[in-house]
Image 1 (cartoon, rainbow, N blue to C red):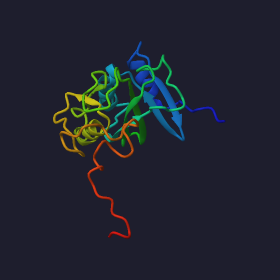
Image 2 (image 1 turned 180 degrees about the vertical axis):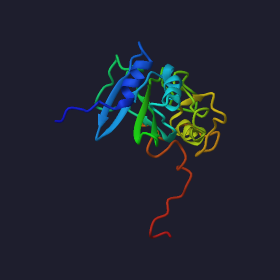
Image 3 (image 1 turned 90 degrees about the vertical axis):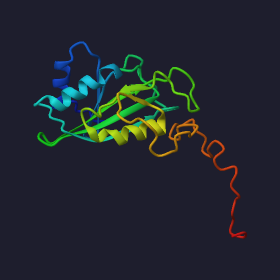
Length: 191
């Protein structure tokens, strides 16, 4: 197995700028990921955009991940303590021809299978840094229930406002929660 190549130039700049902050970094198939504590996310993202040596001028995407029952347990000393949920930001620096994934891990503080919000599933919005983050953050909110503080219009984007759950969570039932029981099953013979 090849040793990971963690010589991405941005990692040293972030470590130099945020002395005393605990980060993790990983490399997989040439892509570097920086794991950031949730309380430092906005500061790190602003640095990555504004520092001329970093110059990450483009936010390509924002996605959510649910690591429920993932075989590798998160490290308890990791930023965010491992975590069940992740919010991943894909950044591009056109000037330096670099890509960087920034990940924030979040742990739920209680079982929230319904629409009620978990107060620990919150992270700062980056809409003020990259206005294009507005809709992807809304999608992560809608599908996973992760709230983005200071978001200009945080409401559901793919399901209706009173939808009773967050469908991309892995504890969401495959057949849904009552959405399909009222429909008549149509087979080949009855069509």
